[in-house]
Image (cartoon, rainbow, N blue to C red; front, side, top):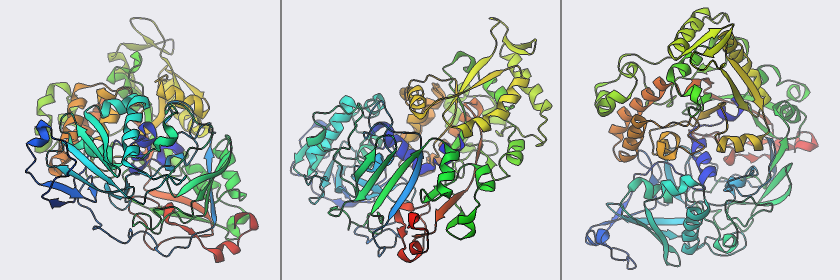
Length: 638
């Protein structure tokens, strides 16, 4: 689905994982550190840390997942903000669908837009670096060189919205709560964590069963801290119909169930002057209004019902951004180029279905996607074809494997497709005329080799006699429009793809239950090969919502585990990432769609922005309302 997936920049991956399990399961981190030659007085003695009792302890205020930190300790603010930006005004966004919960961690229901920002994390990621984190609730961390444990110091000023202090007990409670009531993936990923305990009121200590750098640092890197006094008598897996006690810059002011939710800046927010927050959170109010579908949503924007729209439908952008409010200069339409790593947006097979378990069938389907015709006829030539799970990065597999990649692949050579070694992967290319007879002949040959043949114009299983009928699950009418050309070409092959549109609640439930044949979705963009790839591809996480294709493959397990183990060695990640990309490409788990390397943004002209945009984000959290510009607009949009 174009709208949903085009928005998934690699920053979105972290947010999606955070929504799924409550904590970021992102990259293990390299640490920019100072060396302290003293251990904490509260460190319990265990056989593992006793051996390190005379070793230096690393102390750091910065956690870095890749490369080195851009900002030093005690930096004043991020480079991409205006530290003097005024606070005030209101911004209204639109959402499609509905909501029935304020608990983003629930295992059922649909959480309200913005509910992923109710709780502050221990550390904040900068959006002009790939994977660097700076202190928010936390002040600093300590750990030994073998990563057997870690201590986290909490900022003594940290407070929840009800005035209660954020303590180490809340950190310990958060971990225990997720282990008991969080999703299954959380328990699997953090199985090597022995305990999280408060050893002082403002110091939490994490003990590992066995030292594991990636798991230990991933736990701290993005942990959002829950208030124990609020959640202790509530089930984290169940929806909430009233807003919880939060801790971030905004709290919920009012809401209409399923229709709108409004957040208001907290005047007494304790962290407003921290370096990570200076120049951010400039709107006094942030409101989300819900609409039935994308067409209605766009018309509401043009009529002045909300302020900012990022467009992800090419036809809308090319033909529908016009009218009196554009002519009067009230609405500004912009294209802002970027080089952000791109999501693998695609038609995704559920390979747990028997008819999609054969890679020959999946490859055959790729010949039914006539991207060249679609780009010309439907997309106004705005898109490029996607081909890699590391699109727009140096980890994209191109050409034939290098000698370093061949070394990586050697232990699993007999477990990967032969073409990994002797052919560059490229999606099928047509002449754009809409006539794809050559491609269909190749597709039919593949289907025949997999035990299917056309009988009376119906693709039929040779052994069982069953026709090839499956369902594409969607929730957006836009997706249906884009699926019809694919559907027509499959029909020429005798394959019946039925389009099934459901509401967002049903879609999410069926996705969680893996109750689908195919979806138009995607795999979040990867700026570099991180341990997050375990969640998306490793068979340990077969039940993960992000392992959409249901992949269970020993070679992919091996590569993702090697990637997780080599996070301290960037030079090894390059061949590992490219090798994984090749193996995924040649397994045909998806039919790749398209991407665009620019933001398409329309705004009611009342906003001002910093001089510098963050490299990996549009940076809307750094914008502010300019009163002079707002005064020139119709009253509704001031």
